[in-house]
Image (cartoon, rainbow, N blue to C red; front, side, top):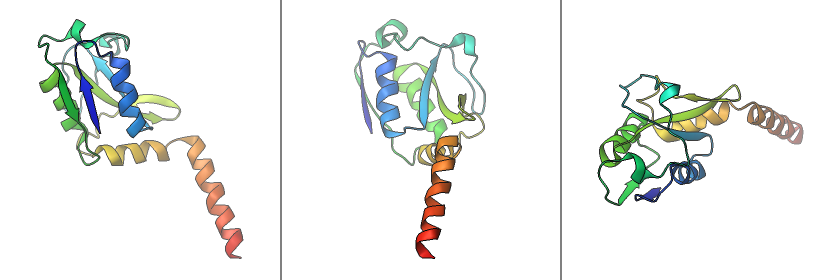
Length: 138
């Protein structure tokens, strides 16, 4: 996945591209850095309608690549180093978006799968599909 980022890019656009590839994950942007395995403060959240040019110091267009085997910590570091913005990878847990703190060493593909598996709708769907397969085999 590639995300083209310039001063006119809104954070919401980056979130949309990311979530198209990883539908059970989201990105949330924050003022100020966080350490690995550390949660970002909600009060430092940046509104998704903000344009990159309003918050970054270096005004150069960037093409950011995110591969499925990239670790969460690497993605967060890339945003910080290349764009100058702090980001947290968010995952669904019990119907809510939560920061993936503690999972920084896992790759984004696995986190997406974990988040999918934690979704109540998919637990029921997977259960029903397994139940249907068993009845077909009988």
